[in-house]
Length: 251
Length: 323
Image 1 (cartoon, rainbow over the protein chains, first blue to last red):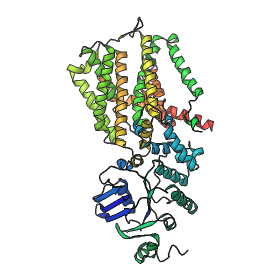
Image 2: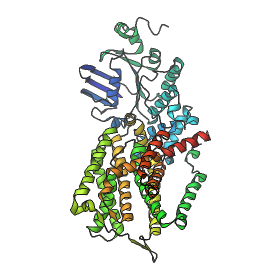
Image 3: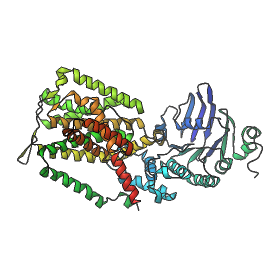
Image 4: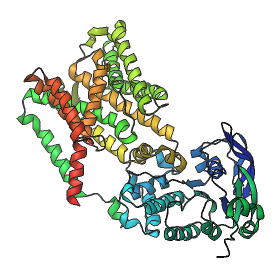
């Protein structure tokens, strides 16, 4: 069984073919990066897997289940979670509320009306575990709007992990972060996602080569190359359209 | 550390308890007129709080909430007068049932859209209901409305409490007011209420977290409708009559005003708003015929100086001081 299996996926917006005949399979536990120039269709591809867009043609299987026709919220129940390129959090709510909402999403009592959310001990316990693990418990009552961008990013990553996903889709997790923050973030991602299958879209090659065990290069909506990081770094076509002549391993 | 998060703060419970004791004692010192006015304020508070589920929690502004006020009011009146049911409490339960059916049906139409379109579609549905109430003479009595709905007599433990007595009726409504307050508070803090706040903040994110946001919006609309209808039914008990004005745009606008002036982001905001509006409409109007000008001016002033409503302003002041 594969974590993600995509067969002949197509998606176009008007006349623009954003994703064209892409097939890809990701093993369970693999850290798979998708790279490519701007407009290559990386985010569209992620949105197709996450369910935010529906595919024109093709099939998407997650952990052996065909999820092609499922809504975005039903896919989450198959263990898919994601973060966004531009931080997408609940800015008017506190850190704790953000994480609680994420933990609660797949609980059977998510429609419960007659008992305060904070009285569900398992919910609070899980949020407490994540927030103290990531050194944010002391700040739990801060409204997200008042946090720095880097901290908001961190909360978003916690939210991605808090629903206990089997597959985590990360869309440029380090965009907008400083070099130092990015490096920290890469470590957090590797540490947090040990048992999780990662599909990560990223521009920062340092992060990609640090995190990924396998890389797919997209170009004009099609797959240009796929392979282990070293193969990709050496691939002449990839270096021509995207990486440039410098080998990222020869710093 | 976790326990602190859950533990009840007993000191915080003292304040509402004190207020409750004051509310219970008030009829002893107030005139009958003031008691009647307070009773009306409780009913409008339930109505405004039900609308605030949509505005404050979900972030959907409705301009047709009077629809439900009318559904509740007319259901009770029709059941008692035309249906020939004499058991008041049976009629009340049946009214809630009718309200539930209406809320879930109207929700199917309203929740399809958001923002300004939601405002317009609720306005349109409200006008349809108003027109129906106005013209369907055989059922609703048209512009005469329906009157002669007598208040029941409560009997328990060998005592009889006729609700036609304004003071008994005050306690009757106070009881329902507190019940609705508690229920709506629970809903607001529950997983459901929290999810509504998430939708208000960022609906796409809620979907990608795994929430079926449509169902939440639909249920929120329905629950708001049920509580709104309940308020309408209580108002019919108080007035002993119902008319097309229950469904009017003015009614929808007034309750919206209550929420805005009181503050939609604070739980008790709509209650304060209901108090202020009813005070202006009843007390100020006895001094000057220009009371509606004062009402309008107070709305403009409150939007200018307290954009988060009066309670929103008070709460942010208290927060700033405690920091």
